Length: 206
Ligand SMILES: Nc1nc2c(ncn2[C@@H]2O[C@H](COP(=O)(O)OP(=O)(O)OP(=O)(O)O)[C@@H](O)[C@H]2O)c(=O)[nH]1
Picture 1 (spheres, protein in one colour):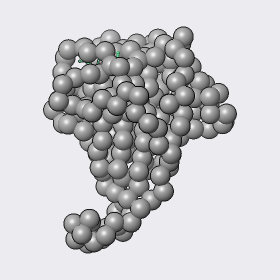
Picture 2: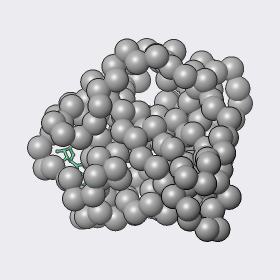
Picture 3: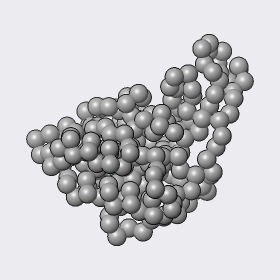
């Protein structure tokens, strides 16, 4: 997605290592009571086939009611949003990538300093669903690990009439990948709220 007024384009941005929690001063906390004062940084990468709605998902999260019917292929863009969950503040950096296919090379930037992955398919595209396992395998291969923190997202759930992937199939795949699962619609603003958004799910898992 390279839409105007939405994000700061960070193609080629330096990768940062996973950050340790920091503690805010009372002034930085805004004097709010009940907050432990802990701030965690979360760098989350959104991956998936082209046109599954990755950018729309990210945009709706940081800028509600920004859904756009037009399609602007993404190069790479980064969104930031601070969310609060169970007394902890998370500074989220959400990196929206260009859509991948099975032949896309895995960019080393997608492995360094990333806390978690949002793997997105469209419920109206079986091909995009099949890409999830491929992407997951590539991430594990590249990182040389056997488990990675991720959330599987079935996007465009408003397109139920042309659904190609059952909810249960998404759920089963996520279980296999040890991931959380959620169906969303950027168009209908479904499960885009803070608590249910994949970024929040990722934050809660780490
Ligand atoms: N029906 C429906 N359409 C959507 C939804 N989200 C996105 N779209 C549409 O799908 C198209 C692609 O959306 P994007 O958000 O640009 O998809 P993307 O995955 O970022 O695409 P790439 O940049 O190519 O990787 C656009 O025309 C959007 O309007 C949704 O929840 N429901």
